[in-house]
Image (cartoon, rainbow, N blue to C red):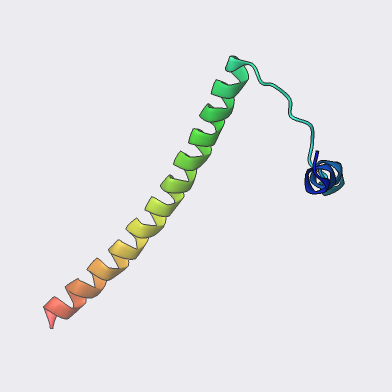
Length: 67
């Protein structure tokens, strides 16, 4: 081993990284489902916000067209 490689492997535990734990296929799929549910929930919140903004702008359009 070169001195650089020896130093980099010795520094790995000092970074605070956890040991890798192998997941079962079931755990992987369940994790993917949870991530997708979170993503959909965020997108729904964003969509609701955008729909409120659209409603405000449409209300402003009605006022402007009425003049």
